[in-house]
Image 1 (cartoon, rainbow, N blue to C red):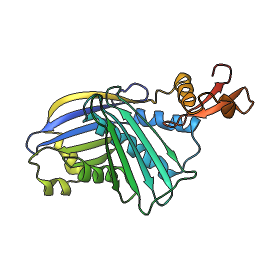
Image 2 (cartoon, rainbow, N blue to C red):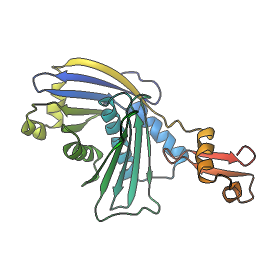
Image 3 (tube, helix red, strand yellow):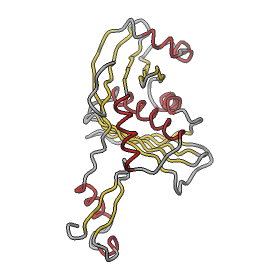
Length: 252
């Protein structure tokens, strides 16, 4: 088994010339373990469905980021109609970090499940896509996003033992072949490829007390009494990863 730093996942990108696709393979055991430990400490207990969706989502988002320009940051929210659920994922291609959390309380839903995807790059206008999606499988939902919002379609596969594979089409792809591709066929493609690059991503939010204070000041500027309600400190939850911080009134 390959060694990976704690909380990290290695993604290898390869080119298959015969099929004209980019294969991005990642081993996510350590990264997903870091997420599970984080959720166990800082977030409310979740059920099995949420755990599976978060693991698939973090892997798929990482593979997506590995194929984006290095100055790209991405945030997505899956608003699931039934059961009511907001699943939030975000990542930075340059920092090579991903994080996320699930919201189950007070979730407002539309007539159908929807995916909201936003990407940002310095000196570029942000892009945003909103699509209706079906099902609970995050790998299939990412495929639906690529089919409707990206220039080239992609397929996502779980290979077992926390390994995931993304097959990204290049111009001139045989679309029918790509649609019919299964996990065994995708795995076989790895035997005849040209290596392109390796990237290592880690599960990390980057939140800290200073960032939390800055965010709260933007909301309660000049009105600290509304925030602290006479208490010496207040607990704040990071909206990105769910970690909780105690903010002191004196420091604020």
